[in-house]
Length: 88
Image 1: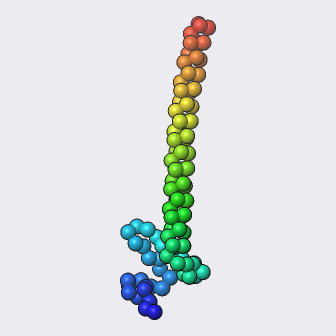
Image 2: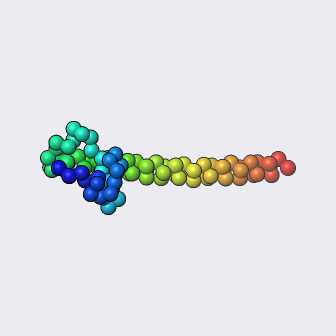
């Protein structure tokens, strides 16, 4: 068996990347057949997409909360100005 690291000019222990996809296998995963590796890859991609969607949603919620806070602050300031005008 030839050393794949030597073939691509990497040192042993360095991670290999293929088209922007980082690949890392545990020693016990080396015995997996092609279908099992494909299933593991697809599961990882789904988990990553799920995490991205959660991050996107939390960003949208944070933006909405900030907008609401600005509206509440503006309304409070307007109310205070109107209240003080009525006192004078």
